[in-house]
Amino acid sequence: MYEQLTGYINNKIKVSEDELKIILSFFKPLKLKKNEFLVSQRQTSQRTFFVGKGCLRIFFINEEGQEATRYFAFENLFATALVSFITGETSDEFIQAVEASEILYITHDDFYLLLEKVPQWEKFYRYYLENAYVNNTKRLMSFLTKDAAEKYRELLSESPFIVKRLPNKMVASYLNISQETLSRVKSRI
Amino acid sequence: MYEQLTGYINNKIKVSEDELKIILSFFKPLKLKKNEFLVSQRQTSQRTFFVGKGCLRIFFINEEGQEATRYFAFENLFATALVSFITGETSDEFIQAVEASEILYITHDDFYLLLEKVPQWEKFYRYYLENAYVNNTKRLMSFLTKDAAEKYRELLSESPFIVKRLPNKMVASYLNISQETLSRVKSRI
Image 1 (tube, helix red, strand yellow):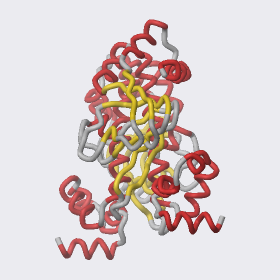
Image 2: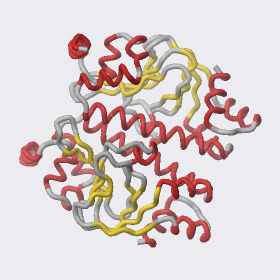
Image 3: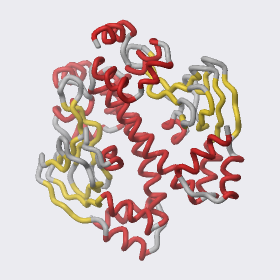
Image 4: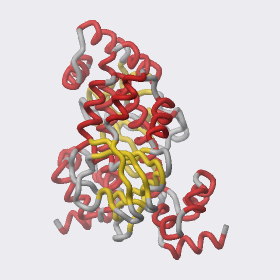
């Protein structure tokens, strides 16, 4: 798993071997059972997660009281409830393992310590934040501006593996629509 | 206006006088008429704006074809259509002056040049991105998870000046509800 993380980091920033050792030393491994929660309601998210194997999902409860999934983090992706991670406030988002998963995590304090210890980590975090801002805004905007068929077509073209790998219930929650609506949309395409 | 920007920057990061001069030299002044657009549909947002006087609003078109306002930037605040600024893609967001306004702008290229020239600018951008992520996510989540009355009560407690300073039409678009719904909610509170 540390090799995967090393690959991810080297892909983003240039660090010396010593700096890489410091960075990796801050990440701890964790195994999760299917459906296990990393962050549940009214908790703060004080860690950021890197997925080595499996899948995490980040979701919230929408106006109708249904689960709406903002993000699936498959292998070699980072995930956290970032608002809570940044502010230290309790989280409106939940994080759950969708499959049995193996992950690495870094705490908020260690993450910010790295910003002081390793100058390139500031650039790493810049890419992280830019990427998070773009992805998150596009996701939430798609909930607010697109109808069910549009959202499903977009999913098929951009992330077909979500439809292939995950059950219908998860796909529906990712589109913020009911399972019935998803069936109707599928039958028309 | 440059004094206001200097105050804003000194409040966030520690820079030398020389560095401050470099930073300020990248910002250019611009006067806007009421209702003038800085970014309209299908344009890219290649500048970031600092409001010296007046008010900018950032909005998008929702599922029902109505304008939904994500953000009002009053005096001493930065604003841009950040997804487009980061990615260079055409913008789903529009930027318009709500009042006659005086602003400073910096281009995307100059902004990124500053990241190389002034090390502290990386930290400035970090605060900028963290703040943008938190505010934007909270705003869009509030559209997705709260009803009209909840959103109006929250607005009154967190940003009463929006209700005082701007016309009802703008307030309704900020809550992503119709003017009729806004009137109904107001009469009940």
